[in-house]
Image 1: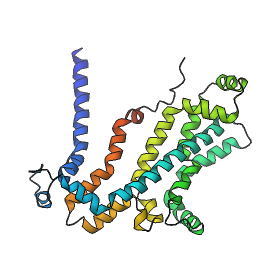
Image 2: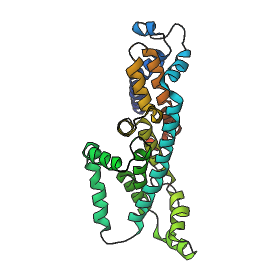
Image 3: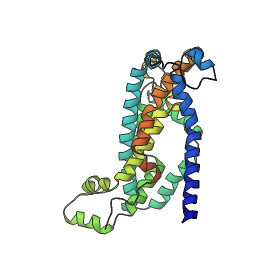
Image 4: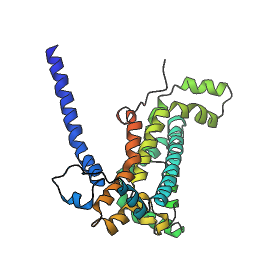
Length: 275
């Protein structure tokens, strides 16, 4: 019993220590965002003498936060919705429909995951330029309509676990293929939907490379581009404001992580089918 208690103390001690180490950069980010620029230069001061809450308002105004937030919200929301619908439909097709070349096509789709993004970056850019989509949200949103191989794989593996008898019962009751997918399979796959939505949200919200390539005008900037522009213009003389802008930009991802942290440690791929 004593050995078990000591073991738990050791494990939890390591976890607390690891969490404290990982929180150090976040602490300096929040602390620095509330300091004056002179206090930020004094490394001996960990906390501000008087919190400068006005730093956040100044940083957001100088950054052009609200238009960038609106653009990022639109792009992220559309990507999440399109990614969930397209990946689930493709995964359902691979899991429940038998057609010639299904396994080979699925293997080819998975093989595309081994291609670095840099390999297809130029051809995809030329394609979107020929379509006249440069400096619009379309190059950032339309690819989500075709799903992601990893997310398709997750949905396929989940749908394969659904008993065939459940689908047969739905067909006997007169449900069409679309009704089975929409009213039966999607509600059962809510844990997978949550995972896909979370990861799509975090990737799209923090994406810098794609908006940098396709968005040119200031009115179309996302938060990542606005933050980068702010850093280039004011990052040297207003470091405290840069830290404040960085914290506000990453705040939605922090809130999302704490709200849905259970999905990060437990995929729940078998949830929804009990008994």
